[in-house]
Image 1 (spheres, rainbow, N blue to C red):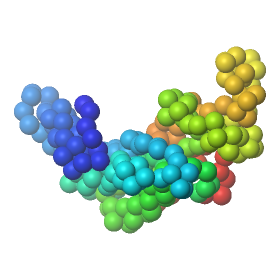
Image 2 (cartoon, one colour):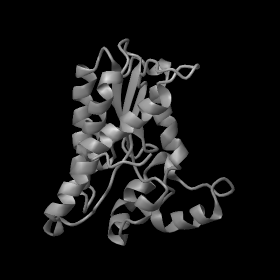
Image 3 (cartoon, rainbow, N blue to C red):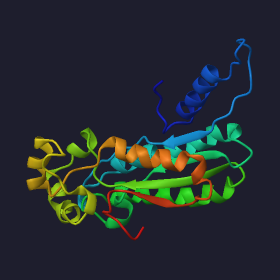
Length: 222
């Protein structure tokens, strides 16, 4: 279903819909409902130089990127496991640490996500592990919509990111050609999703309150 996670009603609707779909026993009767995994993936970016940032851009970005995860975790909390087996993963960004030009609002919102992650890891310790991941450029319309000024500013980062080097004969011709201008290839969505999946497995039970690299080595110190 679709919902606006930046509103209390939207977050509640997501949980209610999940409960309605998955709280039935095999015989069709109402049964126990538990939320094992929450992935906070919704996000927006409205880049602008400092002098051009508007209050509307700030409010919209923080409503979706910061308030959204908070409201969804609040709505899910009553249904989280009681044995530490739950998993919460929020998508942050390398922008929280790199100071990319035009991303004072977006980067700030992702830094807030990381701060909430550490707090929730303590508050929900008996319920779930809570971690974040920090992708860099990822294929798709959100990254493609960035301005030429922004892309030029991060080209040096991309060129020094170990796993973003485009490879002839492995990556598509289009990706290899674009890398000559951009400095390298963005991540495939499956590569980022794979790290989320890793954090949701049983073997990740001893990892919480962390920001995990999901950026090919663009950011190695955080």
